[in-house]
Amino acid sequence: MYTIFGSSRKGNSEWLGEQALKGIPHVAVDLANVSIQPIEDRRHHGGFLPIGDDYRRIVEEMLEHDDILFITPIYWYSMSTKMKLFIDRFSESLRDEELEFKRRMAGKRFHLIAVGGDNPRVKGQALVTQFEHIASFLGATLETAILAEGNAPGEVEHDQEAIAAIEAFREKMSGARV
Image 1 (spheres, one colour):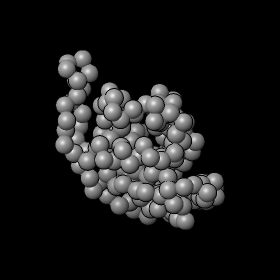
Image 2 (tube, one colour):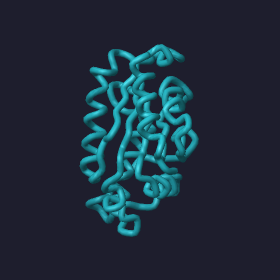
Image 3 (cartoon, helix red, strand yellow):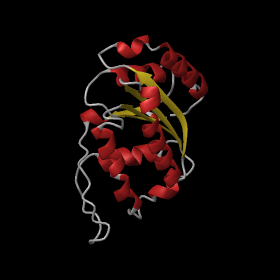
Image 4 (cartoon, one colour):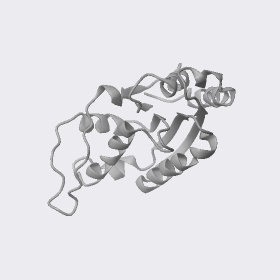
């Protein structure tokens, strides 16, 4: 499983993600510790230019896995800026013939863990829908979506519904390969 942590700090989403990954073989990247630059959309103006950040290395690693776990705090009813920057760069990958991005993403299984305040199980549904559309466009599927409650540091640890969902996820994924 390839895991992408999308927060700018160690908080509730990281804690819950780490709980989900206990005992599961995985490779992880923390977007807070790498450089992902914004995309300059040049699809209709000569194509994308090389950016020289960590994106290509990360996407190549990601493509080697069948299961991809996205972990993000919910910021303003969507994914974090770091996660959005990463996913925006998929546009560049789609046009990279050498990468064969869309073909290689087809059939992958996406999993989402998102933590936020302000009734995330209801208001986070837009984020789930967004990941469903991203997966569908790429020929992948969103297999898991866990939305958890946690605003102040440590609050998610008291979300028993989320903890139960994480335990079920670990059980389901216990046979996953790295």
